[in-house]
Image 1 (cartoon, rainbow, N blue to C red):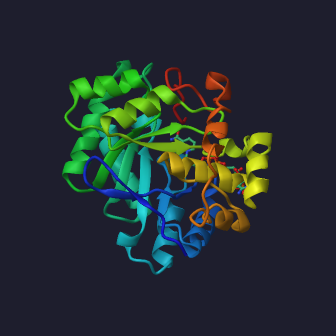
Image 2: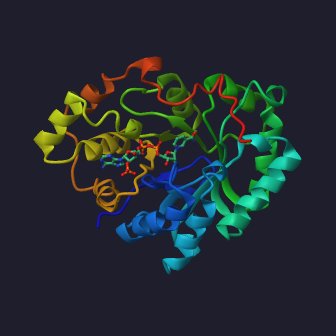
Length: 282
Ligand SMILES: NC(=O)c1ccc[n+]([C@@H]2O[C@H](COP(=O)([O-])OP(=O)(O)OC[C@H]3O[C@@H](n4cnc5c(N)ncnc54)[C@H](OP(=O)(O)O)[C@@H]3O)[C@@H](O)[C@H]2O)c1
């Protein structure tokens, strides 16, 4: 098995570039899906309090026989708990659900600029406490736009280690991605295959046929070659394995540029826009 590359973060920690995402995996099925991913060789799991399945992630890691230190675990703050005291309680709950005394990475899931008086800075400063206590080895953000990152740069001490954003061939998100690259914030690409929407694209299928690979492998390999951190989700064992088999081939010259040219800008976005996203679980 070829090793998954690691990316060095701005705080000195490293993260496996390829992981396994568990968004929309039923809590009752999560432990089995994560167990399968760990058997295949994934050592990085991306969950969130709002996915409701942190418990299954922790169970699968413990049952795998792997040492805690061998698996990189990310979770995220629920949109309902941005006020500092709520965030502290929510972070305790995340560690309790996972059954661990630390996470490798903890993120503000959404900036929610229209809620909490637009104050995501005090939320971020609360994450700084978690990092100082060693309970979150790294801290970062998700779905932050350039203006949100600029505000943190002006008002907070710690630069986020990562920004986890929607990014796939139909939404290159170049301004946010570019800001991160210029300021040492690693880009994590969510919905890396646009939940399957890019897999029938003729540009992708032509490359896949030429290289003797699947469309998903071509797209995830494109992310890897761009330097993105990526964690495709699947509950299908054959796809979990397929999405991991990326390190014994490369795209050919010109392929990346052809995939880049599929960008549809805002029309390619599949999820909410971070500036207007205001969902809080009931
Ligand atoms: N921070 C955020 O706001 C945010 C938002 C969304 C996602 N995320 C993170 O990013 C991760 C990945 O994104 P995502 O789950 O939205 O979407 P995704 O990974 O782009 O796509 C998942 C979908 O594609 C299918 N699929 C997976 N591998 C495939 C393959 N090889 N061939 C064909 N179809 C395949 C899966 O089906 P089956 O499961 O049926 O196989 C599932 O329907 C999430 O799990 C989560 O960790 C974060």
